Image 1: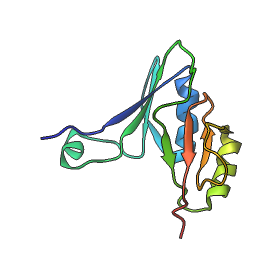
Image 2 (image 1 turned 45 degrees about the vertical axis):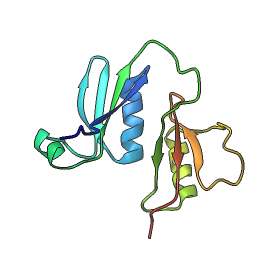
Image 3 (image 1 turned 180 degrees about the vertical axis):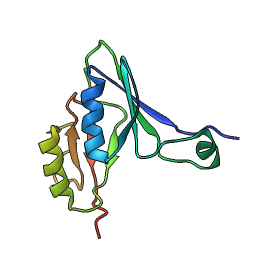
Image 4 (image 1 turned 30 degrees about the vertical axis):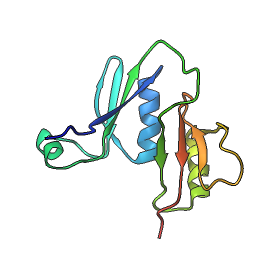
Amino acid sequence: MTSRFTELSIDCHDPERLAAFWCEVLDFTVLDRGKDMVEISSWDPTAEDIRARQMAPTLYFHRVPDTKAVKNRLHLDVSPIDRSTEAEVTRLLALGATRVDVGQGEGRSWVVLADPEGNEFCVVRTLAP
């Protein structure tokens, strides 16, 4: 059998704040929390579910002392499901995201934002009907 992609770990200074931001962005809930970590997801994974099929990974926010210094080499892409890309960008900016320039250039079909700790992510094509 192969491995499964089960968690995406994100280093940060404030796991509670970042988890709350991403819960609002993705409509996730907190699955677990500890002194220096918070795990969020859209589902409560069981070992049986994970073995049976590939499911969306949970997001795991872990407190670290170091500060983000350069552009992320790995980032999340999100697709709005019930509004336009620009309307979703407006919503995410109101939640605390910021627009960033990572050298993407003009006229792209996606928008690059950063979460409250500066981690870049992209808002891509809308999936709204």
